[in-house]
Image (cartoon, rainbow, N blue to C red; front, side, top):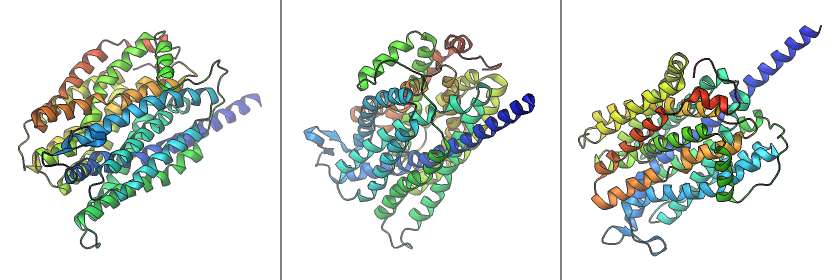
Length: 449
């Protein structure tokens, strides 16, 4: 009788865990459309064109009286959004761990971002400041929401399942991005038949990403459940002070901090490539918006396969080795991008294919590997620091990209400058003994990691 009861309880726990995991996947499905359609495809070139419409005779806009090249405004806006996220994420992460109530905070962040994205429909004419403001709000809100979302991973998946669960989440996100991009492509290329101007079609695509985000966020908010927080002293501190407190705690786990530093560096390169690739394609290579959409669609489709394939490779060779291999591929692909001829979409598609095959896997495995390095009971707080590395500290790449273009006037020089992030990140990650790091954090060490 007792054995049967234990088996029934274990089966119920497993079923409940699977239900939460399926709900968890759907937040990637909901918010990845923002990353794909808004940040990667439409907003960079469109906001740049809006800024150029507002520029003076020398090609500069003057937000708050500061002279900024119109071509750098988007990159600088991305950097500013990160600074806002730096202030907010540590505070929210600590509050989530102390209260155990992540869902209300996740809902607030998700719907703030969705509302700002939907508001991009009103970005027309020379309203570049409105575009910058909405981008800052949406990007910062997405960072906060992703921090909370990622912190569920160690709670809904045991150590042996995390690489697979994380990879499926990324695959869901890229599948959603591909699906919506197909609809975007139909609308954008056939805008005349829909009675829309090109600008109106872009603004509809931007706003629809916000509506998609808000609609599908309901699924994880219904299925994920809050856990009772362990008793902890103290209260949440203001942004930088809380981040400093988290980093001080991480000093007791120096190998976790070492991994985070490596991730901060190489992921800065990944995030900058994602946000600036369309600007590079349109401004330097002279490719049309339709070509860029098809290229990003190719990235999305191959990223689904790539995330799942790298997840399988991690089961055989370990997550760390697989991530290191992906960084080599990133370096080669990005260096090749410097030599792409202008007006040659075929070669741009080859570059997109290379990015797609490594994009999802390198991000998914980094997330699952970090989840092993988090001390129990501090998931949201540590994932706040992780998210600062994922998006929050990714101001340096866009800033370097924007400054390089401002100084040289060449997007080729700007794109090749990002190779340094992958080379340095590889060297830092290679030095981290992850098995010892997991044990030091107080977690069970998987058979293969």
